[in-house]
Length: 132
Length: 129
Image 1: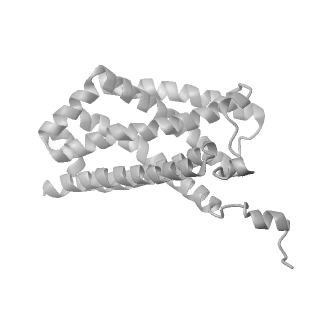
Image 2: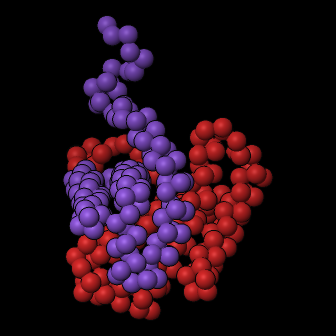
Image 3: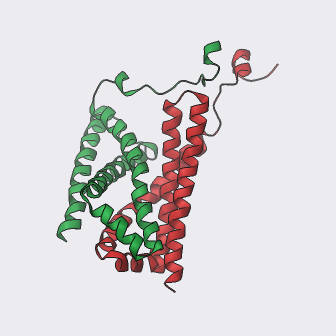
């Protein structure tokens, strides 16, 4: 025990390599990864809002950054993450509230649906940005 | 003799539940329910507002209804985000000092970003008169 004095002896979650790949497992880890992406991505939203409060010059700087290729790539990633986290988050609420959707077949099918939704929503949102 | 179902050894080690789990669980889900409504509204609006440059962006934020909804949305989002990152840190970081440092940092980042963005919205709303 001496070597563990600084470690909390509560168990940790199993890491990715402990799991056999399947749809529900991919959906679960994607929910966590997309959540972390959104955490970092809120810095973009914050920069946009703060620069709008600072004035036209600051806004133009941030706008230029967001419209550059890496800004657009970051926003694209943010959109994909929020689309997926949104769909899979609703599934989590259905699991926790009504308690439906736990059957393995259903859970796998909903996982596939959530990935498909995320792709379609991301494409839809960026169509709105560029073509509407 | 205590009536506890836990063994004497378990009581001495003090490694039961942290007693905060249910509260965390409920708050995570209540903020998620709020975000179901805020996220589509925000994405749709911000795309329109963002296309018109500084004038359109500040005009959108300055509308009282938008400003109020924005502050509520930011509150729900940064709260949800803090709870989520807390779970990730607690799941994977075993070393107490690192874990506690990251949990404190998580709170500072979430509260800091919320204050900065909410105050920016209020500044734009109020200065628009």
